[in-house]
Image (cartoon, rainbow, N blue to C red):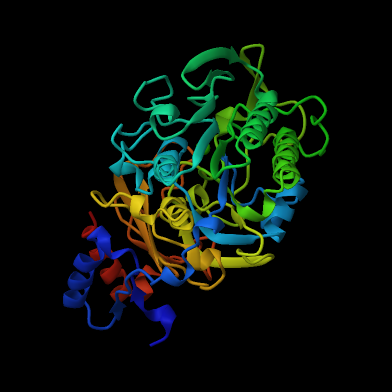
Length: 467
Ligand SMILES: [Ca+2]
């Protein structure tokens, strides 16, 4: 049987999910092969203590799959990030979550958001990647948008309580054209200067790098841009000729360059893993075809009336479980370890960051075992030793509702979904069971459910049995 015709679910066996699905499927289908491949033996590539890399995550807000030059964008200019991709591996099936807060929960804990609070918060007892790395001996810093403490100061949920030695940034989002900045637990000021945030966060990140250059560190830089209300500094505005979104993105690209140059200046380039990605797909909402000025929303006057990004060829946008809502740019650079100039279509997720970074840090034993961790160790795919990676499945949730599952090349969208948001401009699909090959039909344009009843049945059964 050709690989593409197999339903093969490969995920960490400790989740308790695989075994159950395996027996269920073997009872219910004879025509579709199912195999369970436990986690790959990776002991041969465990890093020696002296090889432990530093980690930098650059997490953009609301950047779409089609927003970077290296992902096909033609309006914004992103030469710095494109070069980062050229110097590392660019992933084309990289999954975050549908919206900001839950996406941060997934990244930080390695668990699907519904397990960790489900919304713009987390549970105090969750274990974050920062806690894991801190326990493994790393100094940890978080700069920028947190969005895991109900958008306000809650002592037990803020970064300094969740594994970070240092924090500077805004605990919430900037929907109201303002953010309140904190340094560690100290409230600083509220600012409406959205245009200045990318530089400000980069400045604070650079300070963190300079102060911690001599010890293993983990820096999590979560930008507020490109989340509305966006803005670019005066020297960037109108620079691209393609509107404010492109201008703001170009400024962000330049600031990313400053951060990467600092790694070079401090001689940290070769022993630092840089992960660049986004928390969800691009915003898309007609009533925000405008921007805030003097406290009021005013119509767009210059450039295209599109103050948000692009999901490129993908269907849907932020807030949906179509690919455009959840599949995002994902770039990893680690010179000499991660292949340069490579594109990889393996299924990989922000869920995988914790187990992968923990293993690279020699701290795999620090990943919690008293709860389900949905992420898997993806070192093999990072290192280019595998084109398939340690998972071939992904679940698409919105809130607590499982809306779709992907296994291999196939994505099954469940019928009768309830939790469909009013934004983006609603694409409800058929509301029946839908099946797409998201490799050959990346735009989810051809529902082939009626042609493949056995596959639909097996995947539906699997989806219904998930916990
Ligand atoms: Ca977001």
